[in-house]
Image (cartoon, helix red, strand yellow):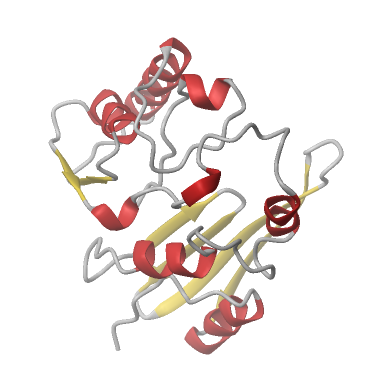
Length: 195
């Protein structure tokens, strides 16, 4: 089984450089085309879906419907975007100092008052049950997968200047190593372990 994590297509708020969390705008024309391109990619690669779980926000549901076709998307509130509270809708160019400080290192800096923390987001999203035998999680540049009882970490290291792949790592790691990786980032593990 493979699990694909797909970000929603563009909205007017995204295109306008606005902080978009719980607000619920639809996809714009570009966002619809992005979802159609992803659908076409999956069709070309002969990828089919057995189950689709989505945030209840319309931009996520629209993306899921376009990409996955006839598969009815289940919604789960735990997949909602981060709650930016009083900062929702702010221009990305006009952040107040406390928000700029948070985003400079959001893994270590606390969220400003009234805003959901990254730890809260990862805790609730990580609690979503995809399947009792989940075997793959894909995040840009990082893949976690299991084969039998072994856990593998695959990472692509990129040069941030030219974004060309400089190295690729495929290493077998243990459960404790993976939990240590998340503890270093001071984040709860998004993986529910089945012993």
